[in-house]
Image (cartoon, rainbow over all chains, first blue to last red; front, side, top):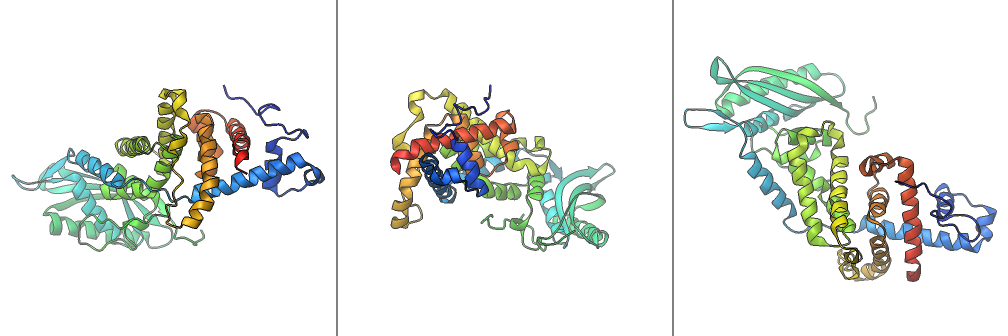
Length: 186
Length: 201
């Protein structure tokens, strides 16, 4: 069970104040007559100042992860991806839906004001050469979103046959987020 | 801020203005959940230093163990991304998982292993400035050794708040207590650290 700070656990100084009281004064920039005269509070304040300085050094300490840290993670991640679902392009060639989603997201990213999030792709039931796509997107706050989505739709429709050799049967956009450029006020 | 390189999907269509590296975290998390490795890699780049250094300090400088835990945190994140419903909660999730994994390891350690004075990570001027290294190393060494003497849950609260800037509420959720109790724990940790660092002054 968690204890609340008590007189005992809050490190009481001989003058009756606690280290935490001194910390509170430091944080609030308060200087009391007692603190100016009291040697115990002065010692505690010096200790807290040193702790603050050492903490700053700890925050700035340029520790980096060991060499190869990121590579090991990404190797495992890519191995995991190879187990994913795929869509047949021809009788001999399949394309991974993850790779296909990446191409479609990239097409959407080319439109200013739209960011692709998630993407679901399935083969059209009556046309094996076409796909149905659902994509969640974020839009930049302001005017022009409808035009931007239309542009994104055209780019997806163009990217599929040009880059993959599939047609687009349907494309549903779902707007799930809105963002503002830094410094822009609503 | 990230220092990541822009990692494209390999397609030759026009990229987003600013590239992937400029994307907000919610977008990267949504894409990573959708099994986009390029987005996940950027998330790892953004957080790897913070999570690794938290593990290193929680585990008192045991670098091999810290590396293993930190890698496991990111791989678990990749596998469990579909369960993280709120895209903005990704960072909290990483901190929570890393802290809990470290606390579990420390519970299993023998008490005698807990303070390892020969294994403090912060003594060599990593930035290559010997003068700064000497000046800094004394204060850092004092603090590192003092930290190692705190009970692990207290050390976790102090590190998460004072070094990693996490909120009281977030830490309270992580250690399953109230923000008031977390404040109390950090206050005790702070007073202990000042006490233990006294001989170095």
